[in-house]
Image (tube, rainbow, N blue to C red; front, top):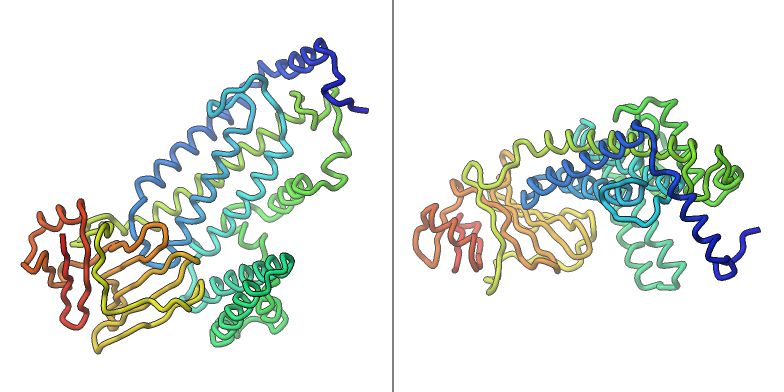
Length: 401
């Protein structure tokens, strides 16, 4: 029986700390894996930074940046948790592969989601089907959450949104090609993927049998079920007491290796995805709207739901499309109807206000304070305080500094 720490004599406290220090000489293989994760996480953070501020030309790009960020965040948490890490100063080295396994299971799931939504090649119909099934699963989860809280107002909002998503799915050609039983699960928000987890994982480079073993192993430590605690013991071959043992080191090493693999694969794919999306290239200029706002002739309706894309206005040549990507953010795209090329992208968010992400200076006639603009003037405007107005009928972008 474990006694409360308040009842433990000082010499026993010292004995516990001394026991934890037995791990001062872990194997070279383990230290190599710690070093590997350290380097990979730092490199991924660098890749994330150099792609920061680049507007997402498609929803696929947007979710790629979201999922990559989520993976890096978990990677940092793992790097701070494991023994002998350069990310944290500790009085003792605490060994806890069970918690590391929970983090890495989440990274495995994020890796699968990234490949499925952002890397796997498929038709536009199929991608929209996948995305809206994700939206339906998210919506259903929030309905359940708010219902459990007794917040019927929020739950009803998501029920209304779920009905809109169902309508989009029912009209989707790829969704209609699925088995009726699969359609029913997806429409009820019970299933986030149209493919099996293991099939997606295999495409992402994780062999099926290995994936099944990993998922079973890691899942057993996420839940406080018998497999997570039946073999806890503090002997040489024990585990789960926070002390160094061969089992703790081996399983922690596995977690470090897998986390590094998931991050590297995703890093390479996001680099390729954004390879042709650059800052200030090909006449595209980006900048943040700061200070006084000039209201555009097109306003974003407040009732557009998350995941919904709506055409706000169009002429013979151009259409203006808005996408609600979160509760606090909406993206506005000006597109050439004939080609689908985006010639202006604006973001409205509660956190950052109105942001003019990019525009094609060949397509638009640009005026700064009422006069024709030079590239030097544009650079200066976007590095300072500015406001803008878009006249899509006259193909003119008005900037005020």
